[in-house]
Structure formats: structure tokens, C-alpha cells
Image (cartoon, rainbow, N blue to C red; front, side, top):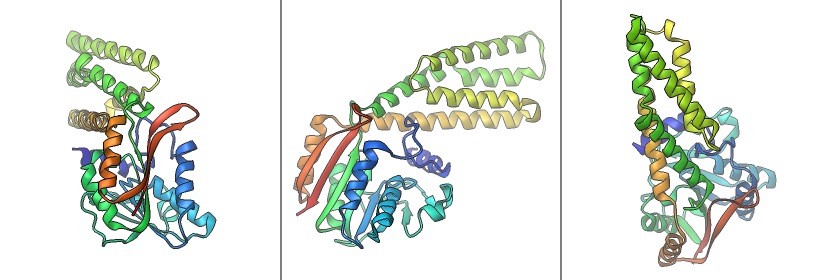
Length: 313
């Protein structure tokens, strides 16, 4: 289910892989640490970006390489069925020279030993079997090669937003049952009468309560999505058959289910300080040295993740 959601999400063309983040790409301090990492690599270095999604980190690598004549050889892999050249606006130009491979597990990378000088990854390793992923990163890195990762922090704004969106999902589904009310209204609307009006008022009441919750939220992205989707159905109802409407509501229900599962996985994958120490110990056991990790802050004091770096002994 998680892979299905990611594949659908990336086909939409978004660069940033976190729906709680309003930015079109990674900027600020996050971008700076990636620019410093890629800018420190030798010319011609082979770079592997794991969990690349639609390639925001790979794109930073390419931008740095182009600006500094580094001629980095960049490969991006993801478990989902990705195609940034096709799906991202202006993808063929943005990612010229970057190779992408979908259907690739970080626990079983399809590359030879010591193929890469550097490995990058943002919000990916924490979802995987961490020991297996670290072993694979160590295997494909050349001696002296470096790895830099950004991982979800249990106390980060990203996780806080995910938890809030999960509360909103419960409000939509469990408390308001707005999709059931929408389906009931559309079923009765053609016939009119008291039952239709009762269903309409129930749907309007739910919509107003969801709008009020969105106005009070600092992260109303999920509620806005549901409200926009239902508003579009209401506006186009006269041009849709009952079957079309039922199909659209089921698609919305399915998308909500996938979104909720992804947010649950995000919250579960987020790493505490104890988790990061265990991760650092596992990295050492996998053959890494120079291990360092610290909280990564955006826009001053906004915690967005853990920054981890190490080199292969």
C-alpha cells in the first residue's frame, strides 16, 4: 500500500516528497547541507541517491555539479515506480544526464561493490531495515566514500504535521463520516424530496465543521484536499452520471486510505535520540567511521530531521 501511494504521488510530478511541506523543493538549511555535501566531491564522482522519489536531492546534486564543473555521475533509485524525466515538469531538461531506476530496494541495491563515491538519501533509510540498508550502502561505496542522510526526527515539525493530519483524517472519516454523507446525498439528490434535503443538510453541516477545523489548523492540507474534492463533485454533479459520482467518491476514499497509511508509517519511522544512537552503532558495525549526527533545523529553530554523515573505512 505504501509503495502504491508513493507511485501515485510521484506521478503527480511533485518534487518534495512530504505533503506536510508547502515548499516546491528543498530550500534553506536543508538545501545548504546538500550543496556542501555534493560540492565537496571530486570531479567525475559517481553519486547514488537512495529513495530519490522525483529527484529533489538528485537535482541539487546536478545543480551543484553544473555550477562547479564537477561532472558528477548521478543515479537515483526508489522502491516506487518512478520516472522523473516523464512526470516532473520540464523533467528532461532538469534531469539531463541523471539516471533513475524504480522498483529498487535499498536493502538489495543492484550495483557492484565500490561503484559509488558518495551516497545520499532524505527521509528514506528510517523506513527500511536499517541494518540491511547500511550494509548495502557500505558495499556499494568505494573505500573512503561518504554518505549523508537526512532522517525523520521524532520531535520534528514534519512529524508534528503528520500527527495533526492523522487527527484530521479521523475527523473526516470517523467523526464526520463526510464521504458516506456525500455518497448518501448524491444517491438521493436526483429524486428530491425531504430525504434528499436531510442528506444535503447533513453534508453541509459536516463541510462547515471541517472548514472550521481547517481554519484553526496550522497544517490543514488534508482537510483542504477533502473539501476541494467534494466541492468539485458538487459543482460538476449535473454533468456526471450516478456511476461517475460513485467512482469518484470511491477514488477519494481510496486516496484518503493511502494517505493515512503513509502518514502512519511516517510517524512510526521517526527516530528518537536513542534510535539514532543505535543507528550510529549499526553504521560502525557496517564499517563506517567518522560518524556524526545532529538535529537539523530550518529557518532558525524549526527542527526538520536528523542529519547523519559517515565515511567508509
